[in-house]
Structures are given as C-alpha cells and as structure tokens.
Image (cartoon, rainbow, N blue to C red):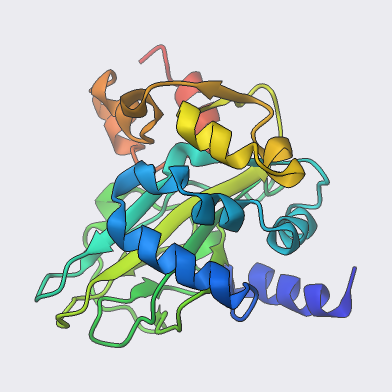
Length: 262
C-alpha cells in the first residue's frame, strides 16, 4: 500500500470519512460543474463528465484499497444530484444512509462530490466524525440538532468526500444566492447477489472505459423511474420497511430481504 493511501485509510477508519482534494484534472472539474447545474437527479449520471468521475482510475484504485478488494462495483442505490437553489433554506436533518455492522467486513462506501466551491453560507454538508461506529434509527436521528464535534465541509470545487455509509450527516442551512450542488453515489465490493439498476444511458456512459465496464458488470437495465434509488419504497409501505428507509446499501438490502416476511 502506498504511504499516502496508508495515511488516508487510517483517517477514514478513525473518523469515518476522508476528503480528497486536487485529485481531478481541471478540465474534468469544469465539465462536471456545468453538467451538475444543468441536470437534476439521476440524469446527471448520463453525462460523460460524471461517467469520467465515477470511473476515475485513481479513485477506483483508492476505493479498492479502502474496501480491501480488487473487485469494485458502482452502488447506484444512492445515485443522486442534490441541487440547492440560491436563497434561504433550512438545513436537512441528520441521518445515515446505511448501517455498518462492526462484526462484518466493510463492503460499501458513500461518496459526495462537490462540483463548485462550498462556502459557509451555502448549506455545506455536516458530518459527525466517529459516528459511523454506532447504530442509529430514524426515530433517534430526527431528534438531533446541533452536535458537539460536527464538521462542515466548506470545500473547493472538485473535492470528493468518501465516507462510511453509516456516518451521521446533514445539510446546514443555506443563506447564499449561489446554488449548491452535490453529486452523491457509492461503490461496493462486487457481488452478483447484489445486482443493481442502471438506466441504459448511464450504462452506455460508463461503458466508454475499461474501468467503467468493470464497475457495471452486474448491472440490470431499468427505466428511469425504477432506477431511482428510493423507488423501492413505493411498493413496501409497512412500518418495518419505513423504519429502515435510510438503509439503502448492501447491509440494508440484506436486512430488507431478512424482513420480507413482515
């Protein structure tokens, strides 16, 4: 393992996230910036710039180091482009995107890419270092407000935060007239048991490179509605499933399968 990867991996395990800056070429950062503001939702993953982001060889190599597996796949259950328009808006509530079981190997990562500078007044993402080691439910997290030790990701364009999917995160209040976008996606250890959905356009986009083709080899083509990460909840309205609505990654999928009798 390269020395720079070793230090970053230690930080990732200790705090639950690592922030990568200056990892991307300037022209790629510029292309993603334009596309992220022009496209909303999962449509942004059909743009060549974002395909180049997801299949960036250096990032995929680092992700393989973090997950300790040479076989990596895209985890598009949380494909999304969050766009906050200019103007005052409340912050988003604290939540986690999946549960990490400490007795199991880490099998997935959550990525948050910022295509533009994010200042203090632009509703930056808030993270709570160390919170990835606990189990949280929505009934607990919805009561949280200001938390001692929370950190705001005030970053420059082209920054990528790679986190445990179980880290507590939220969106700070937005007071700027500048729009703030964040592209959210994930990687996981490739496993044919955990297939996933991609639109035809996104699949074709990632197929342009050898790295991209490796990331989508277990993908199933679906139309845009079925490919949206939360479409699952249109068909399962029971309390049990709603209670674990935040768990949309590998562990969450296994948990839902276990609870299907509910």
